[in-house]
Amino acid sequence: SKFVNDKWMIKNGFLNDVQEHKPWWWNIKVQKLNLSAPLILLPEVSCQKAIEILQEKGYDQAPVVAESGLILGMVTLSNTLTSVLAGKAEFSDPVTKVTYDQFSKIGLEDSLGKLSCILENDHFAIVVHEQMQCSGNGSSYMKQMVFGVVTAMDLLTFVSRNDKK
Image (tube, rainbow, N blue to C red; front, side, top):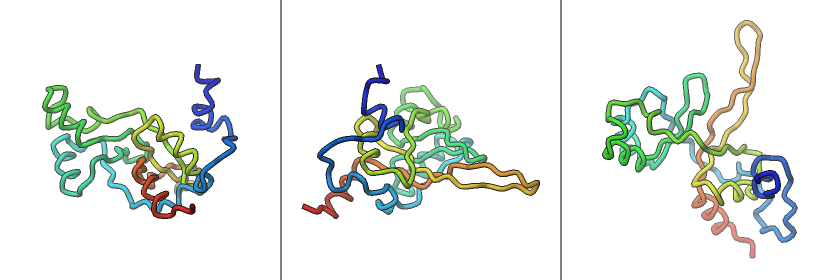
């Protein structure tokens, strides 16, 4: 029953965290992590090419984002290799065949406390920033841009480098 689970409520923005003894970093914004720009793969990239790109660039994972900006999920090197070796995917298949479509998003303005709650259950979170996009006919809409991928190691590194004992 998720509706009575405070961590789920906080993670999904339904409840503000009321933890009494928060660590010093709890209310710092995600943008302070100074994440590097992510490598992004388009959905038509083949599994073979995804493996090559990830290895060449030194990444373990990358978001898969459609040309429209829609975030489709995350591809990992290990899952792609495992899927191909197990016969669940072919090297020639599009990377979307091995993409994790369940992922958490967090904004640059969200707190590290919220990120910490997400990372208790997920291996990573995709950091997004909403941006207004206007077309030539005058219409506009909000588009989510992938700003980075954050892991527990990123949070731990930040906390240990900036520890304010």
